[in-house]
Length: 226
Length: 310
Image (tube, rainbow over all chains, first blue to last red; front, side, top):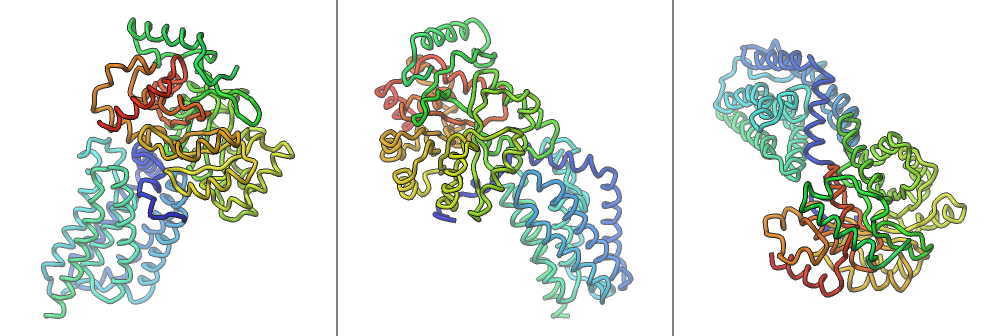
């Protein structure tokens, strides 16, 4: 790209906020009532993190893998690609994340906190997951938009990426650091998109990502200290 | 019926519109007749083109949203009903080409639309293929104007466009840039290739093209399309916090948008400005800037100075 320094973020924004908001309205309408199912799945993931033992070690990555692949297909390929020619390039990343989770489920599973000592970072991560499941969808009405435009875990990429980071922050094992890369990248990208659009919620996804990263580091430090 | 200066008839119509504005709703909020638009000739052919067209950057990228597609179609319908001709798009603008195609199918499509699009692909060998895809999305027989978008792979694409023009597959060819980028290279292409059109960014605050590109366009007989006359709405947001000048009527404008647009299209070297909008009332307001009086050189200086000090 010639004279790249002359470009601003707004030069890469292809659509207006009204189109972006309508995108979620149409997406929710097309998938309803899947939102109930994905929220229940989110609750099951939360329960797996809270209970002692490793019985959910395969279920959690399997559920997350299915949701990430679902978003790659239904949101990026079928929906977002209609207004953003860059979306088909993002979809494979979400697909890759989903496949990685499923591979983990087929292999050793995700190292859940189980019966180990639960540090403050773990409690914070579980709280963040709770917020991603139940507070993220009410952001839309809180900002004066119809509930039909809500971004729901497992349906929309932002709450799914934030919730995934929260789950990974609460877990153990080296693989979780690798699994954080795509959600972190997406959180940064969506933050920039919303910021350029002048959306009030622009900082929500990046803040969740930073918080989850800090929680993961806090959990690791506590594990090492134990 | 091309003209570089407002005709007596246009001035009378402008006066009528002003009287109507005093009597009731703004004149630009109502449908207007095609005959009243000021037109300028395309230098390479003499074909007259109304000085206000319709852009599609961001505004028509609505995907397959049926509600927004219908809203966009209403904008195109109001533009065509108001006598507008040039509609401009690009493969870079997401679903904008498909939206225009949807609107034109809904309308008929109207014979007098001047279809302008761009080729935007780094592989020079695939230019024709992309142009054909664009044509299918618009649903038209051929493009009136095909431009090389932001000078991307321009050497190869211009060769292709010259061949297409020679065989009657497009009527005019051109190059584009925006936000003042690559002007030196742009000037070299203008000086060395037989272009019908150039497209550049120009507004009351961003006037760099006045120094070299506009004089070169006049010298070479190249039509000038102006994109982003409102700096993508930023300029309107900036000025609308301030009072309109007390001497507004001297410009022929009735609103800030018309003030800004009249500044652009009153430059005699500018052939057509292409503001984009999502609203029917705004497209009518923009078209109304192509009626009535246009500021002269002295008034243009005063307009630029006024906005600069806001």
